[in-house]
Length: 135
Image (cartoon, rainbow, N blue to C red; front, side, top):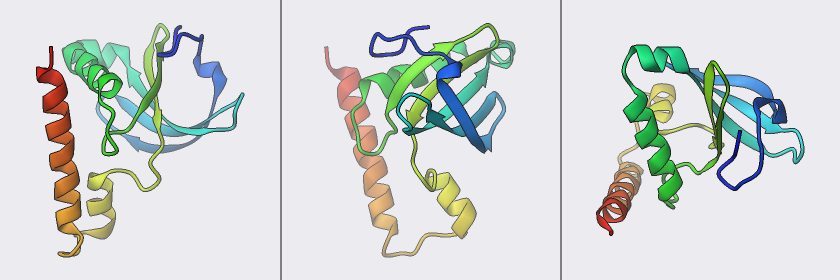
């Protein structure tokens, strides 16, 4: 299993610390890389469920975007690998989660903070659009 930077990485290189969230195709865990002690978000996707629900193209798109976009508003993908049962994405760990988690935990966003969140989403969309339309 090859990581994005040419080295070999497997699930054995990581210690799963705790679950962070779960969804229809898998879960996201906090994990620590054994060799460095660095913390990452480890997305574990069930291959069989992905195939059953015809989501392979969606997963490929997700990986492609994370690989190609360099934005402060999109988590960085450091490694991707697989085994017979799962796809693994090792991503930048964002303590506190995403906007969805913020809304779920807080219930709402203060009016003075709202423009920042919307501008960051707009910057992300603009950056992604520019990159996808470039030759």
